Length: 409
Image 1 (cartoon, rainbow, N blue to C red):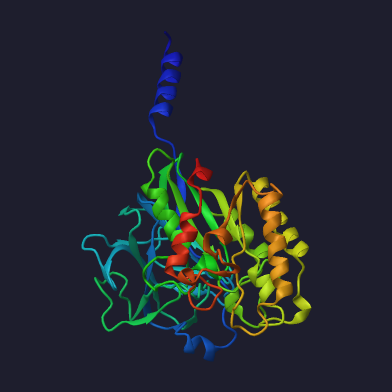
Image 2 (image 1 turned 60 degrees about the vertical axis):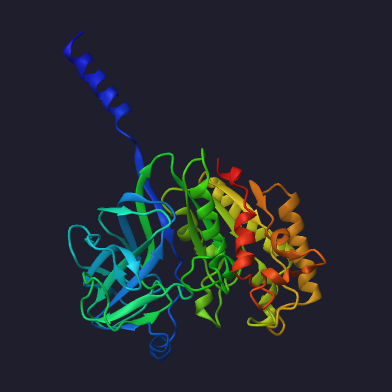
């Protein structure tokens, strides 16, 4: 056997011996545009100067190497990050002893994020727990308005004066329930590990679920996937935005985000490790016109279906499996003009298409999971979060349990 053959055999052996890994997002949040003026930003506590914001996130899968994705999406000016740290959260703003790590960006401890841009930290070794909580601390030395904002986080984060990124806790902390500048946490995982993106509106975002309890339906799904035996590990990313629509931006309320077709590439297709997507969008396309949006933005069932077909085509183009969620009941919703019998007819038409068209790679019947059997146009009272549109904790649990885990084999 000559030297070249020995070398080639050694290379082949090494290739088989080395485990193949890739980046998989364990947590994510979709940003929406900035509020339009400084007064609104101050009222929402989303203006910062010489402050540290310690943001708390709940992981789906774990790992021992992690990186963080920050975003100045929709920002009008560059944002200076003076320092950034990541740690395992113990409780409140307190981090677990020995878990604090400095985040660096291209070898630097500070970075300026251009307007509209994302940035990615360098990898750092940290034992990231599955279904655990991380604290990402960002020091903002200069006056800056929050951008890359996910407004309805349903998670408390903490604000303190000065650079407290490496502190064990934030003393005398103010609090916010939005995520700012932070859009993703990723872990290095075996090639067999993948992610599913839950893509939707406030019902995916977990509106009316308990704050700081992680009881959104994607959280329930993530817990079930972690607990199952014999299946491949799958991370779950919640990319829901309250008030979001498929076909229209929310000019009157920027918190609702840009239309789903506009954000689909960033929030779904660009996510590291994504292999699946669950779409639950369309109820606001029906409800908002004549309520919080002008009548001129009224859409037909066929318009909604055309939008869903666009997402299906774009997911398939990238080799993803895409599953359709049926639109949940909303009769009795107290928002003036949001529900009408005509809108209900259109909801039923969309759901019938989702169930029977075979356009999706699978169907998740969220409507069946939460409807009242004796009054199918309404949500079961035990599942109702109180406004006849959004489920409460029990309703989100039923939705998370309605997802067939065999979809992810």
